[in-house]
Length: 203
Image (cartoon, rainbow, N blue to C red; front, top):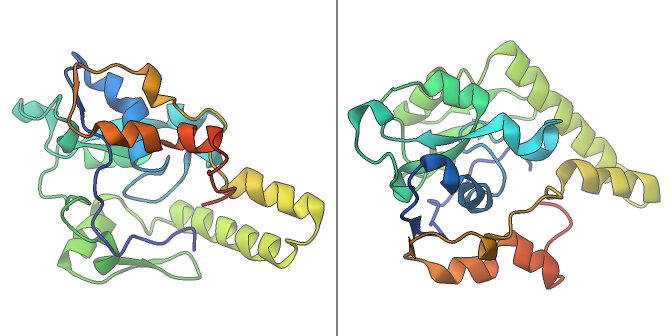
């Protein structure tokens, strides 16, 4: 299911620190959150400009002056969700809250809130706006169709193109933060997995 909120808290794999601007954390966040917006679940691959349609999101807003460069306060979000969140506080942290316990995506593309926190996420990010519902429904239809034709070579290739990893995976070995509290994550980043032939074709 491509629009499935996780049923476990996100455990961070990376821990870079020491950059002077928060934009430098973007390659790490791309890998950290599997090239997907944590709030609406859209993927980089679905935008013509890829990661340029995504941004570094501060869970605790920048205006409070704390956590601006703290990796543990940073999330990966599409530009639309980033704009909708603005400087709001009280948004559930996916590293502390299980989003799958708060939100569920139905087969018709609608999102159902499962809790009060889910309702906050639903309202804040306007997850059931008509365009967003139609967008999800279109990709769900494509998923069902291509899955049914997976034995066809052209359909299988199209399936990989739509639901596979971006081609421009960041090689985190080339990024040098001042410190990294979770250095083992670099050896398991998606770029390295591709080098080792261990990267799944789709996710």
